[in-house]
Length: 154
Image (cartoon, rainbow, N blue to C red; front, side):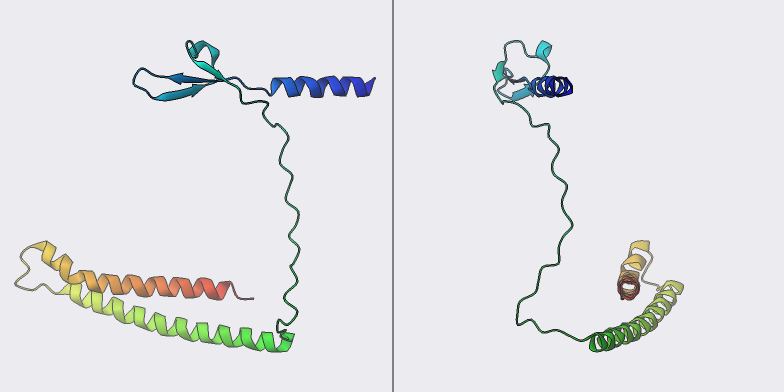
């Protein structure tokens, strides 16, 4: 009895999944599609067949693909040494970039504190300061990116 009931439920779902889509051509030649029968007066019924109501299969966990046979392997001690070297280099770059950022900020502050006699129009002040602001922004972005890269290290 259960099998019959479940078969009927599945059959009803299959019939309910069939959509009626109408293609309507407006007087100005633009095509419009609708599934509302009351809006489809004078429209052509499209035969699109049943709609698939089965959910997509869930992706399986990715298996690690084996590397090529001749692919060089690195022992864990060597890899740890390489990671430590990389961290040291990134920290040096970060310290250097921080110094450059501080210097650029000081240069910008110095330029902001002066006003030249030829700059009666404030746009000229902004034009003069623009390269200094760009330099500060560049070094700020570099510091941010180096910090992200350091945070992502193992």
